Image (tube, rainbow, N blue to C red):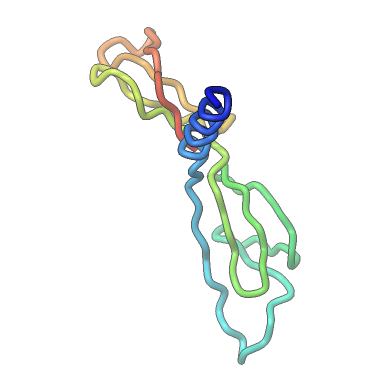
Length: 113
């Protein structure tokens, strides 16, 4: 029974940590027609039911009536107030450094998706 409770606790923690940041973009209604492609925020056209990673490090899906996108980046949220997070778009990652000494890394105890 202790093992079962421990498993539930781990699962609950995992589910909380995996609360991805997602959003949907509703496609314009072309006289009620179902879309066969999607145009993303950068103007790039994607086929229906396709998946791609956009320039904001988000994975997107083209659906009949909307585009769904979710962040792929773990974001640091649990760190000391003397520190700041810096996003690196080139490799879709964050580093956390001291505000007054950017050459010094800070420890992070909580990350969210």
